[in-house]
Image (cartoon, rainbow, N blue to C red; front, top):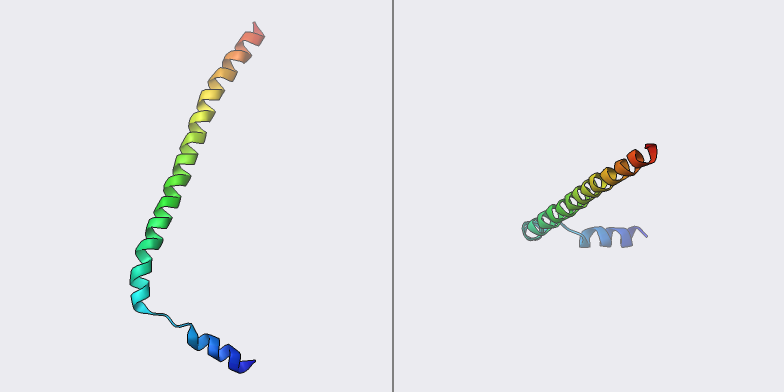
Length: 64
C-alpha cells in the first residue's frame, strides 16, 4: 500500500510550464462565469422592476 501511494505521489508533479499555459485558460473561464452571473442578476433585477409596476397598477385598480 505504501509503495502504491509513493508511486502515485511521485507521478503527480507540478510542472511550471503547464501552470503558465493553464492559468490564462482558468482566468478566461472565471471571467466568463462572472459575466454570466452578472447578466443573470441584471435580467432578474429588470424583470422584477417590470413586473412590480404592473402589480402596483392592479392593486390601485382593486382599491377603487
